[in-house]
Image (tube, rainbow, N blue to C red; front, top):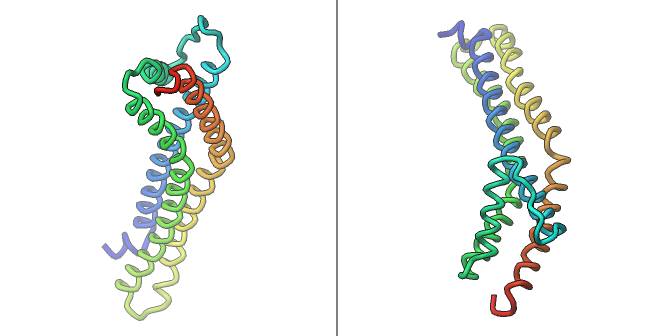
Length: 187
């Protein structure tokens, strides 16, 4: 066990775990951003399209949003319709904190890997400082992996998210105002 902890084995395992977390975070943020884009585009199209114009759905996600919007427009229960609109708003607003969560998690995992490696190295080597320096140099790579993955994730989405979330909120507000105007003062 000591060669695994003192050598590259533990470092590679921890870095591999950080990369897996990065992939999970990237997929999650990408999926949510795709949904926000689809919602923004669909509501924007409904705001500017003529009453008879029908835009063919580009994906199952767009089709699901179209069906939800139609159900909201045709709903007899205004409280349910408002709840659905509010759910859309909350999902769009959670996108930026989601990115922050994943980037922070990656940084923390990198630091945890370094500290864990340092602690395990100290436990195995005792008081021999020369045996400590080699493994410590290896464990620093977990911090590098965590920071690098965090930077890549942030660079991939940080500039896009605020623009799409703002656009989604604006389109949703305008679409909801138009929905209320069509329903009349009772809704």
